[in-house]
Figure (spheres, rainbow, N blue to C red):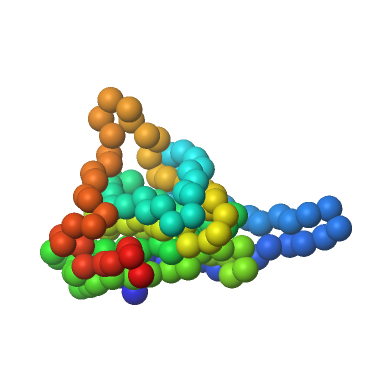
Length: 148
């Protein structure tokens, strides 16, 4: 696994009323700080990649549909420099993935229905000076094939 990436398996509690799933708590071992929570979606077959942050840590989970989350370690001083990680996120085996700064990340909706992703980040989004840097999803800079 890429250095600094951590995974927390989640539990879905089901009863006659529906489901409940805690995603991230401030007393979790992987919690750093709270900045913002947002949700994003992807339609079937859509890729949302690549981007990275210089300061913020992401905590990503999928609450509907299925995504394939890919990570790429572009940090020259990292023990896992050039490593690629891949995770399948869905409610069948729920998890939250902690993505450290400077690790490229992106996902593809691989379900027949729209996927809904919840992201908790450690810094609020700054519209005037975003901590977000993008790379084309099909660039040779990242050794990952979204077409598979």
